Amino acid sequence: MSLPPIRLPKAVISTLPKDQSTAYRLLSTKRKNGSLTSAEHHKLLELSDVIETLHARRVQSLISSLSHTED
Image 1 (tube, rainbow, N blue to C red):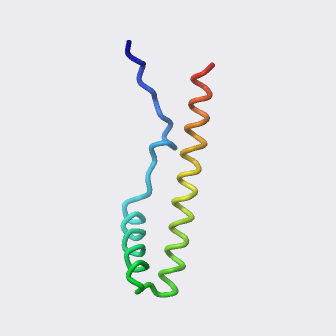
Image 2: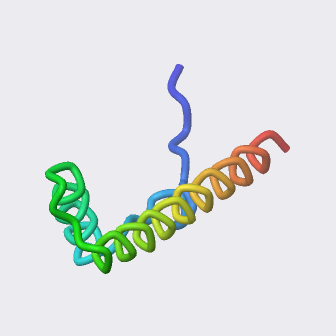
């Protein structure tokens, strides 16, 4: 018995744009090395907020799509 494929909403599979992802990794590395400036720290916090919002939207969208499949 095989299950039908699940069509995931765009919000579930969306990702951080490459430039933001690269900046986040770079700033995270600088933070771990202790070489983060105040301005970079602020930018890292902004990117962390963007990532957190993206994850929250993914979860909301996934829950919504799963609840619709139970109908």
